[in-house]
Image (cartoon, rainbow, N blue to C red):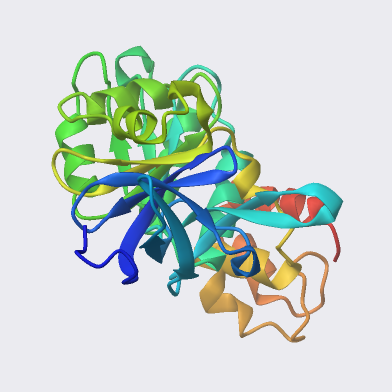
Length: 299
């Protein structure tokens, strides 16, 4: 810590603790902080400036510029930030439960609109029977440039490649319940002191006081933000234009559409529909786009 407690110091928010925050200073120590009310909501992963205010406590006085932020619904139709400054979101799938590729596309479109990198983790590879529909879908994502990591945590198949992909990056795992996200997290964090122990010790609030998200440091370098549920990937902040741009393979064709406000469904002169008809765009991915378009809060 600085010799002058009044000097603003850099830190990173690693967890929410009730109405307080766990902030890690540049020296690696963790302390609880409250925030100035005018700052608004702070997200896990935020880089901040804080100042000491006695008794091992601190006060966040500034949120440093974010490269991106994921939000979740809040009261009154508003949203609140959950995780910031992410390099990538990896969506976890497995043979069981049946992969929900509509959810995958929704998460991908939202992250594309926020300039967050993406990849797929196909877990429980030892249980995969080679189902053609699943294999085709995985290959389609790979063909449009998304990395696909095929792994088995229990068999330690493919896990080295996944760990390499996380090095030096701030990452988040997401996906359906039951696909093994917790098992993957435990595997990634098994050789390193889990930060929640330090958070609880520093705060005195106990192990179960963290909510919404927690940032952990990986032994091989990089950070993993653990956030429960998929509410942060809702469509509240999306519109038709952002959704279409979120389908990476649509992008070369969007500018060729006859109308600037083309929804890429029944619009005359739509280059995206033309590309689907010519098998240049996956018909399955396109049909999922149409379903998500219908779910948008306003069109």
